[in-house]
Image 1 (cartoon, one colour):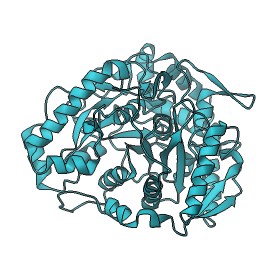
Image 2 (cartoon, rainbow, N blue to C red):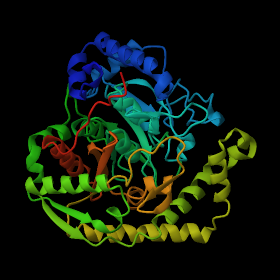
Image 3 (cartoon, rainbow, N blue to C red):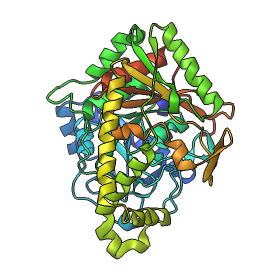
Image 4 (cartoon, one colour):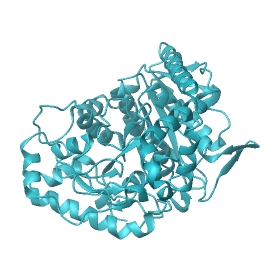
Length: 466
């Protein structure tokens, strides 16, 4: 495996310099790699043939360009002018937008170049990443296992060196879960921090734009662009957020209060995952952090409230399409949308009220801690075709298991980062989840970077990809 396709954003930015031809050469190399690996990875739905127009590149060079020449992928729910946007479904198979989503516009202005549109669980409705229309993306560490979803292709494209970073969406864990199972960093920023305009929605109340990178400094660079913190700046490289995180380094852990909500988040999980999380906590303490045991809020109705909100809002968007194109939907999506018809307005309103209560409960925890740390998922990547998992003799639907530790933070809106924290005895990655106060995204990413620096977290090239 060559390291050519695993360079950091700063390395790629330096390689591109101010040269449009160099930027185009980098893009073409990544697209060639994507085409070569896509038959087995199923990461991409569309890889454009044409190179970026010179005029577009020159425009990017005249303004702020922290991502100039950096090749990225985006989940195929973001509108891309002149490039089809399918949402992973036959329903929109031939839809070609006339405009770009807000995140695509910002990335263009920052000089990033699009490798292609990535695969996903149809209309984001599912956590396994299964897609009978465009194929199911394979886990890069073991092709017999799920990459998970719904941002499956985004994560696989980054883990296999087909893109330097990717932009996905996260409604209940759709960036963090596949990132944890595929050994990369996945960031769900504070709710609303990154504009969702121009993306095909699944659930407006819970949808977050999320980032997939191989390290936290890269996440900081992309976050600053998409959060709008770089507006009006004209700099040739770097990111002030990434610069600040680099300067802080390991000292970002000194005196930080790490909250440990053991109830729920450390229960009914693979013992190796729990051991990896405890090891990370021990290393955090050794690096100067203060560990604080916390009482977890009541999580009994989190999954129910999340689904009630999702299904009602999804149905409200899909209803007109279902009236004429129901036969084009996958069976699982169609069944779920039908269920949405039976959720009463009272159930929906009560779920929203419950969500507000959860926000207050978790805000109270942050009076005693600066961040929370938990495992990202209770299991490693399941085998393809798995529908139920068993932990400590308890049977659980795969979707419930994979999102058990993640979906609550879509309800609360907190920023959350997952970072890889070692390999399971199966050789599969395990993830550690860092949760911050709303709008303290920089602190969350900074702690993730510090974990990478002390060797607790970090990307490892998957051995199954050549």
